[in-house]
Structures are given as structure tokens and as C-alpha cells.
Length: 293
Image (spheres, rainbow, N blue to C red):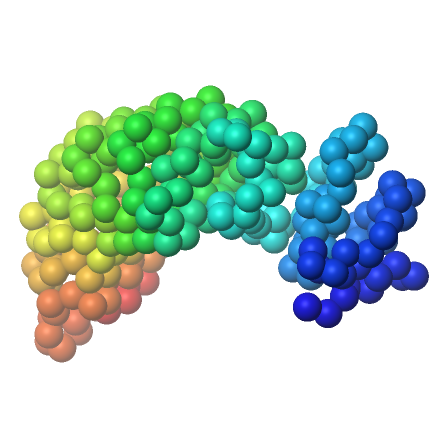
């Protein structure tokens, strides 16, 4: 891996560390933070603190970095959950303070433990993005995340190709922990109409505006249920791709008076022929809704 050069200091990868003292590391940190935000700068910073021995100086410089990183895009401040530098036993290390986005990816054996660590750690308090992709998450770990007092800043929760059982889905739709959630993606998680019935009365995400329920088995019955829910009026962008929908089900949704704030509906990869698509597109246009078919 080539070295990243910042001013007069060159920083190599972990397998080729350069001998540095705390003063050198501090100068390197200043140089990194003086650059424009980028993946390269973030990776250099992450490697720097990952190699920095635990000390008072390290903690002080993490404080400096956390303050400077406040102006960076949250998505740049990303870590894979498999990165062992994130953990101290069953909790996150202080490095978690720097992270705003974590992805648990293809984790069959470790996914539950990683989610537990995230849920139980005070260093998750600044996390705004959490993605769980193709992983096996135990009911206990899922429950810990949904009850965590440390994830109240979460803005994006994305769960993809990770099966959620009835109890996990119910806990999510009744959880009060994610009051700032803006985007919820539940794609390929096994949702069926009866799961939506759990959320009939309310959804505990008052600022949610983006909802993705693609690649499930909602069918027309599920979409009819969705069209009756008052909380749908807060959604601006909805994705219901690949849900075995017919034209009748999509039209029912478009006709709902709870779609008044809806700006976009993505309903591609469903069971709608060309004639049905033409009619639905014309109907959506009259509603000022951008419909993708």
C-alpha cells in the first residue's frame, strides 16, 4: 500500500509503520486536518490513531480531531464493523467518537456481537448512519440496538438482505429510540402484509421522510394497508420495488389522501404491463408525484 504524504510527513500503512513520537503524530494530525475532507484523509487519520499507543496525548488529540471533523460529511467518517480497532471487549473504543457511519457487512458469526458493542457503548452517541447487510443478527442484539440510549442521533438505518423475524420487526416499528431517524431502508428482510399491520396506528419516527421497503413480499394487500396509515403523510420518498405489486395496488397507494406530501415513488420491478404503466404514470403526474415504473 503506498504511503500517504502530508506536507513533510509520510504515513505508511499499518504493515509498514514509520517510527514516530507523539510530537510527530500531532504534526501529522494537523496536516491531515488541514486538507479538504476526503476518503484518503479519513483513512490516513484512522490509521494514525489506530497505530497511536494509548496515552493521555492520544486522547487529547482525539478530542482535537473530533472537534475538527464536525465540519466533515458524516458518510466520510466511515468504519466497517469488522475493524478490530473499534473494540475494547464488548464495547467500542474511544475511536468510536470519530465515527459517524458503521456498516455490518456479511457477518454471520460476529454480527450480533458487533451490534451489541455498538448498542452498549457511549462512543456510539454521534453515530448517524448504521447499515446491516447480509448478516445474521440475533434477537437479543437487535433488541439491544432498539433500546439503546446511545443511538438517539441515528438518522439513517439501512437493513438489507438480513432476515427480520416477527418479533424483531415489531420491536422496530414500536421503538422510541430513533426519534431523529430520517431514512429507513428495509430491503429484502422478509416483510409481509402482517408486518405492516403492526404499524397501523403510528410509526415512532416523527421526522422520517425516506422509506424503502423494496424486495419484500408485501403484494397488493400490503400496499393497501400502507395507503390507509396516517403516518404515510410524512413520507416524501417511498420505494416499493420488487414487491409482487400489480397496477391496482399501486393505484390504490397513489389515490390515498395520505400521499399528500409524497414527491417520489419507486415501484419498478413489479407486475405491471405497459398499458398499466402508462395509466399509472398519467395518474401520478396529476398528483404531482414522480413515479418510477
